Every structure is written in C-alpha cells, then in structure tokens.
Length: 189
Image (cartoon, rainbow, N blue to C red; front, side, top):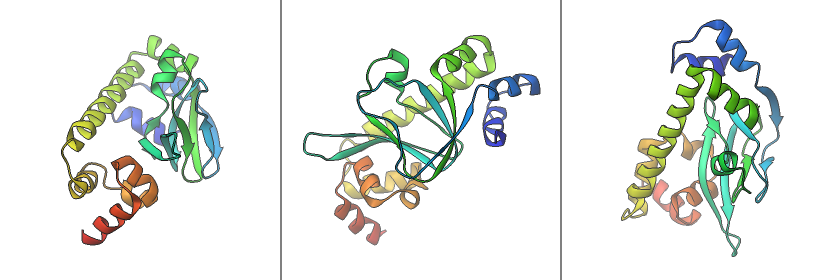
C-alpha cells in the first residue's frame, strides 16, 4: 500500500526506514470511484492526497457553466486544494477523481506535524511547493501569447501523459481551448 509513497520519498531525500514508516503511518488508504468529489466548492480543505492509482483534478466552474481545470495529479504525485488547505478558507475549486483511484490521505493536522517534526518531510514539502510554483509559472507565462497549437505542443513536451489520460474536455479546459479546437490540433500532430 505504501510502496509508491516510500519510493517517492526515498527518491527525493535520504531517510531511515523508521522515519519512513512513521510518515506512512499518518496516511490512510481511500478508494474512490471515477468522478468522486473529494472536495466541494466552498468547503474548507482538510486533507492532502498522494495518488497510488488513478488521478485527481482541481477545477472551477464559471457562471456560464464552463469548467476550467487548474491541476492534475497522477500516480506518484500529491494533490490538494492548497490555498484552502494552507489558509483554512473555503476552497474556490472542486477536487475530484477522474478515474477509479486509490489514494493515500493525510489530514492537514498530521501533514503539518510531519513538516514541523521530520526534516526530510519538510524538505519534500518544499520541493512539492517549488515544483508546483515553477510548473504554474511556466504554464501561465508560456501560454501568454501562445496560439492553440503552441499550447498543445507545450503540453506534449511538459506533461506528455496528460492527453492520453484525460478526456478532451478536461484537457481543453486545462489549456484554455474548446474541445473541438483541441481535437483538430491533435489530428494535425
């Protein structure tokens, strides 16, 4: 159950088995169905998730009913509504599984206790934050001035599995394109 999480941690820091087991003991297995909501819009996020199998997405829905996807987490990655988790304010997004998923869930309290008491876990948290920030910045600044084809090429280069793992509708909402535009571009690649 914890082998992927342990591999993730060991790949990023040097850690003894006792500390690794202690970290894992704070995570509980959650089996989720496809399209199961893990967090409703305006609820306050209380958990961080590690994806063992499946995937998570974070998205919003505007007044016209159009979805905009902000983030995907796949096997071996973490996902949460971070602004809500940190500030303990209502989330301004939904978090859902997009496939049948096996997740390891840790409470906000336990997560921050580990950050405060286990230096290796604090180091990994900092890495997650930094990577998330860099990826978001590349996406935001990269997409400014990109036409539709350049956005899809960026996605293929930086997140190659995304187009094969999620629906055209979700991928299009992540790229800021219509599903039909994305379909036409994928046919030309």
